[in-house]
Image (cartoon, rainbow, N blue to C red):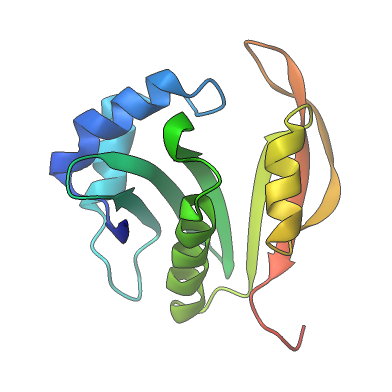
Length: 155
């Protein structure tokens, strides 16, 4: 059993630990995560972090950025031991719900083109491949697959 909630300052050590354990996660310094947590959750909030946790452990996190009606999923990670349990989907849904409530029309993201399991996850969530950004990632070098979906059911 797990719960999804807003990321808080007390979560940052565990978030940084999970990013260290997840090669696909961005290597942001603590100040970036502090900025995400410091965003006040109101209609004008432009960044938001969510975590999935049980009573003892942080199991995953997501961070998003809202700009001009588009929500960019900046990062999402689930602990290796907790994958394929619905946590990733729950985090993605939390981001989409937050964005939709703040007027976003679309959810977008970049994912390593070589990360077939992540691409399959996003496709199951209804995101479509919208293009390729060559040489976007470094260490290791990789292209970014651009993916997105409308947050409105009638689009």
